Length: 349
Image (cartoon, rainbow, N blue to C red):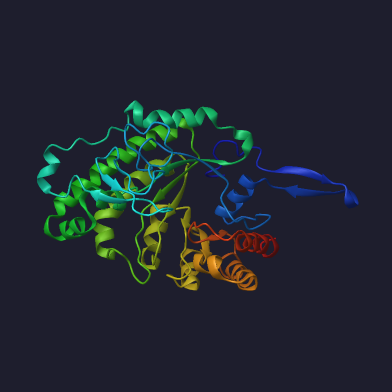
């Protein structure tokens, strides 16, 4: 089966059930997730994709001197630092990531002297192989390579969000050069991930606001889709699954994501999308992950959470292809999160 990757065989395990001496079909989490992704016959709806994530150094906004720092934002409030791209960060709030304050390519002339990070630099790629050596296939999880801020988000960190939006119109060739060079880097990282043996990759680029696309469809089609296609074609040719993250209202982009070969789309933000419309477009073409409002999990009652899970599974998971998850990661009240997980286990059986 496409996308089984490392550790997926044997595909099924049979277990003898003592009561009644009947044979039951047993799937571990990874096998069950594969059945879900491919719209097969999973045993259950899951609240997460079982994954061991590997990231190149700098994927999480670290600088070259940040050896041992898993996430560049693990710094005290007030900290300032520069990542491997030359983006200057400032952490202003506890519990939240910093904000890019210095954009090294804000001015077109800066490109002439800018030094692009090298994906083959040992400081950048070595952690990939260190993680691969420590990965145990017996854990029955996906080995997942991270492309955080894969393209669009990386471009506005380098150029500034307002600037890159203006350049799409005033100097489209400059915008395209920035995007092409970013994707050249991601392709270099992808080759390391493939060599290291990943069977899934995760990419993130937030494309939506609460009510509409952040960028128009025409901008996506002309500037972003051709670059995504370069990366996705490499991964699809190697049988690697693609999990794509985009917050906000992304309904208009669903056909594009399907055409590009996205296997799982997350987080399917419940308050920003018409979930019935989403599943109508994606059913049996692209698996969904998310659909449970973060606000509800933070502030809702136990009965409200149970009802939301029940409705989401009925709507998004009736034909398979659904992981029932919160649509954002937050420090949820333990009782509320426990109610969520209990509801997924009950209604997702």
